[in-house]
Length: 631
Image 1: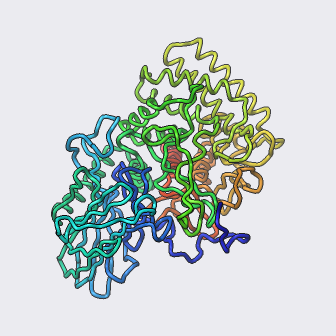
Image 2: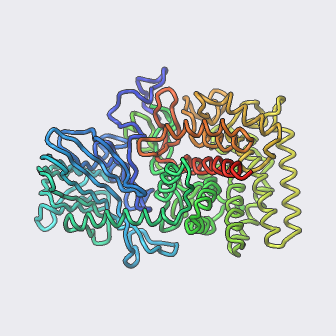
Image 3: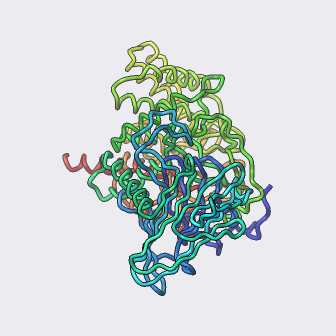
């Protein structure tokens, strides 16, 4: 049960005074095994080791006593500037203090692979570069004199087990913290003092002085021995990201920078050992300020597959696309052959949800959830997402791998068996099942793509059978899923709008000049928006099993950009795209939702789906502009 907030009854503003930094003010670090969030004051407020879905060791994001790791100037909490080093996920923070200037570099480091990874074993072929299982931080005094402070206060298992510190061999430069069966090592050239559950250091730097600290969960707890080694680790990490980005196809266009940042974010949310992509780095960041709409997004959703493949292939990142499709091919289906709607990043099926009632939640938003209770829901859109992604991949490589054909058959058979049945819909509503139009639409996608894949394989009989079922689904949608004015409904028993019907444009359900498609897109643009940003649905019109309002959904807003571009509303598409890009975080990142009243981001962060939809929307606009140039 949720503890009542004093804000209950009138709603809590996303901009209410709070000790928690705004969600969009966090910086994102990644080593493609796990990720960290860095608050503006230089504190690591979220880090799970050794992988994305492990329990946190720094969890101040969800409770101010659940662990943090700060490195920065003593007594100064607001930096002058924070930027990513160009083309990387390496953070550079500049500080102005009364006595001078300071530069801090932070990264979860990557480097040339050395032997097998024993910390997070790979099922995919290991790449040339891999995670070092280190968080490395360096400090350089640029000018004057600056006193710096290091405070490392881990709290293992989501804050439940404060770290117990010991100096290693009596050396004040190396200390181990243990709790909940884990041990991490802090190594630094600063002199450490152990104060209860934290390690602390203070030191005065003058112009040209440098120092470092590194947190290790690597094999043998290996860590850099000096500042030169630490700087070398950071430089190698920057090279990794730039080399990776250099292999991508980046359009020479005004959207180039947001596309690059989105690509780096999506890669950073990819779990290298299996090729899976997590939906977001975090759990339980609220969709409603102070409310209950708090979910664990550190898992891999099947509906993300098609958008992931679209984005990766658009950027020419075919290696990552193949790794992801191989992850899908390895997944264990349910007894009926259907894939679950989501899996763990290691492919596990059981994501049983629990709550951590000992945590306050971000700005009082409770409960804090670990696991996701929607993992075993019936969501009939999953089949279309999987089969569309396979078709995208097959068309790219011009071959249908043998191991993918059984998946095509099973998902097409499942879609055929269930498309007439109600489900929980794309938004995982916790109300009663309905005949959601978007689920029927994705059933059509499933059979349409299966038919095309059967033709590629040379099985004309199956192609005809599946094509006929696709036609039957389309007819059912157009008969029962369109209201009297010719607009696609949320589900068959309502005239309410739902942003998921924008997928009718994106997946080619109807031609761009069809009056029903155009009417549906424009109705959402005009009636399901707040200040131009798109809502998933209106919560007072939808039984989603939850209470409270939610913010506008960024992915739906990017979908609207794509849909407007598809139906020929080029200027409206560009206008909305520019507005969306202007509300990115200071570091170019997007959460799940945007509160138009306060200008704050809401929901888990950074959100892969938002960045995937950004790339798709940008691609639609760029394609239209390129076609216009030659026509």
